[in-house]
Length: 238
Image 1: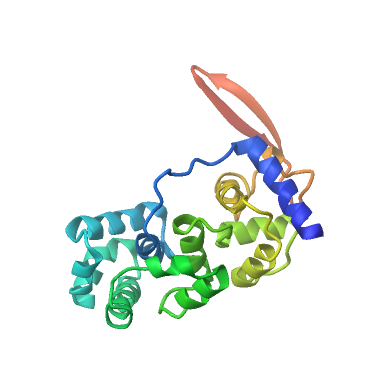
Image 2: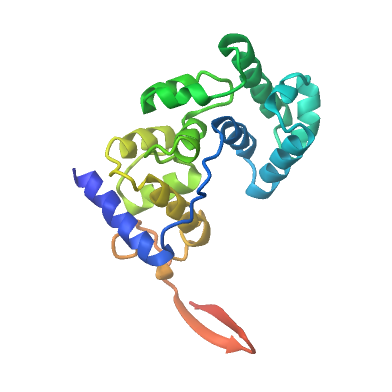
């Protein structure tokens, strides 16, 4: 119960800072999200998006991608990095669905509960809890908060978990996740991690969670704000 209250408090403070993150009215296809998330592993959003768009533009139907060799898939998605591993994972997912399910689709997941979906997806090569939980959150609209490096770092610094393992953090926080806030909580935490709670030199002085945070090595340099023409500039004062 204490953890649930802490999550609610953090979410409220983040909403005051960032607002409610926009969400598409159209629900993405689960297989699109799964493959897109596989491509996003260990790379930046720009490169993973390029790889995904190139793959979908070249072969709009996943059944056409399944007919390709792993090497052909690798050539298309190489911009995302780790092409051999990612192309292997994509090929095996598509071939499994074709051979074992009779249809290259993940629509059957809608009939399963959250834990069943996670267990089903992590059976695939290259699919861990983070990737599987992205399918839960973004495609199936379940109240599940994926934990990437940004989310894990911020939650540990804030002090509501103490785990270097993102998968352990995922289990801890999702057991206590309040209803209907996982999307905004996840999305705003990632934004916080990218913009303020950075791995190095976090901008603690402008963090909306400053008074709530337990991080011992806060960066609290004073900041001066001055204007040059039409631009506001920040200058750290040691």
